Length: 224
Image (cartoon, rainbow, N blue to C red; front, side, top):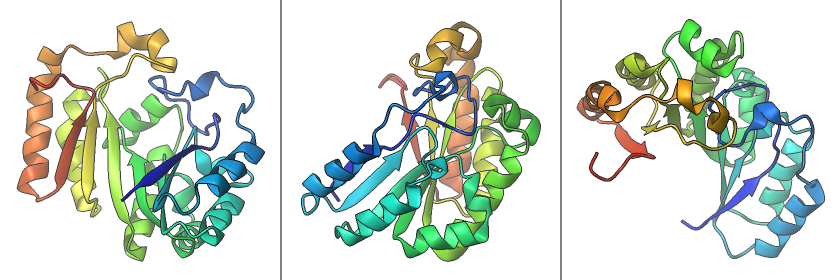
């Protein structure tokens, strides 16, 4: 499947200190919606799907309008990278499904609120994210979770994977910290050595594989 990638907004309703987009640092959006529309129109017929990301695309005031344009232009489906918070509203999740959002890539950075909500600086965020996953899975969408590994959640990796499995998640992605965006400034106190990550990472992978889930690694050396 050929997939067109759209960065819809720089802004976000979370403030993850490890954000590769540096969304916590943006005070205004640099993305022009006219450019997004033109890009979609120019590429219609050349791609099967559209991957939308940000920032947090679901908070954009014209997010649903963009989905409707994608549908009118004939793209077969939409993939959405999101923190999942907006999906906690069943009617919103249902609208997205009706507009062909078939894969949700949802951030999950802790198995408990003290870990996840601290990392995302979003009080109550984990509860909404988990409800969002339940809502879209009930509708029949595929879900891939993405977990960025930091010193604060490295010992929680197996629990995160188990939680994802219990929610019916299809695919877990475990990502090393990328030293770009906001993470560049906090890299020294956020990043863990691979030697310290290794035992927790391998145990988490074992949990995923034993459960029959697809598991992928991102940002690690090939020797991993």
